[in-house]
Image (cartoon, rainbow, N blue to C red; front, side, top):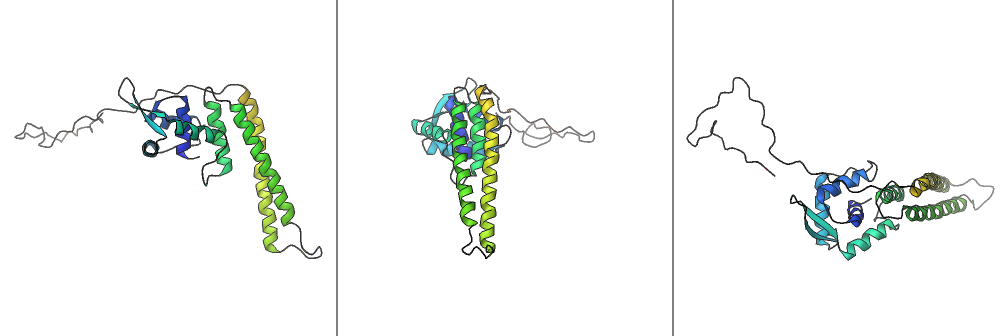
Length: 223
């Protein structure tokens, strides 16, 4: 799952601030996705430049809010509807999409699961067909060439993955019928001055012309 898709999808719930979205990615994928906070903010900057999100004011304590544009909402709904990120692994996309859909209030998670079931049934049928074709020798009395045998095993692996996906999705169907959704959490980023290092007993402060206790510049508090 691309961070882009996760952030856009979380914003379907309404405007949110960056740290809130950052925590939401991990919480709504069951801990599968732990994104660096810098990557979250860099992605928000790119989404703003691409006009997929737009500034939406601030919270009462001054945190900048982000909201979807119409183009951003279209992209989010497309991903929820089954459009995988370019180059992404289909299994990872399925798991992340279903978990996020289950967590979002107002999203029809059952439809998301049904869509994934249909896609994996199609992948299973394609893998079984590939195995059947690759396993046919031009000469019934001649064993398969090594390359053909590898193709058969690769197709069997794809089929096994599809069956595993279908089994997992079958179990998730029961969860989707209930409610695993929860509202966004209002977690705030940590702010304020870092605690000073403890002073050693032999550290004696010295006077200075500018009034500093040790002659060094005094740090200012950061928001």
